[in-house]
Amino acid sequence: MPKGTESDTRAAFEQQSKVLAGLETALPDPWKTEIGALRKEFDLILNQMPPADNVPPAPGVAATTGLESLTFAVSHLLSINEQMTAMLKNMRASADTQLSGIPDRVTAEIQAKITAGELLTKETAEAAKTEAVNIATTALQERAKVMNARRGTLIAAELPLPNDDILAAEPPTFDGAQKEAIKRLGELKQKQISLSGAPLADLLWSPPDRYTHDLQLMSLAVAGRAQVPDPMLGTGAAAGPAIQVLVC
View 1 (cartoon, rainbow, N blue to C red):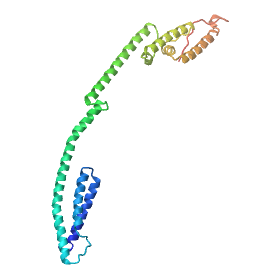
View 2: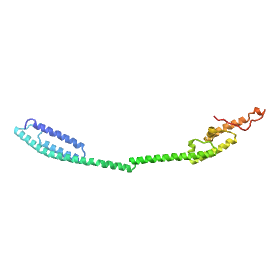
View 3: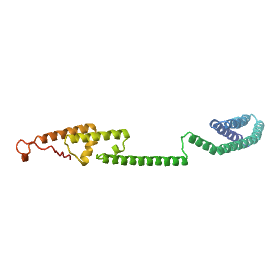
View 4: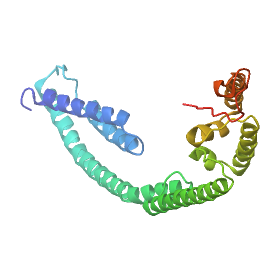
């Protein structure tokens, strides 16, 4: 064999063995096993070749050893080629099978999430949106209907109208506020405190502590005004009972 051919051949086989060893480590089964079998074929060829630094005792022996190792390598290369071709076909078929099954698996996963309520289809989402809008619209219509009915009741009772929060309150809350407003209106008349419009509405529908505070101030104002002599009625005469308390 020409000088250097044997060492070059050995180096090439060693390189291929290293590449296959890396693949064997990186790939999962069943490819790990098949790559391992190919690597063993290259190692078998390497074991049949003399060391790179081998110096044969005689040219004839060296030539025979090199020729035999090359013949062995070539014959095994044909076998390796067949194994690699078969392995690649199997890998391609397996990959095709796995890829072809992906859409079905994805569809199954999505359907499972839809069934579990984790995902909504477009139709379900649209139906839920429509239902929510209908519920909200119905609620607003019912609220407006209740508020209009209560406005009519209050106007018939000659009570000023409260704000929308009171008009739209739950029945127990509204009924309690209405009874309290009627009671307060009687107290104002009894104390001869005359209010109208927004000031009257604000006082009748105000929170209890604020109503109590404002009523005390107005009562004091009425009492003080009643004690001031009226010059038109003469000395010592008290002012008349009709008192107008202006609230700004």
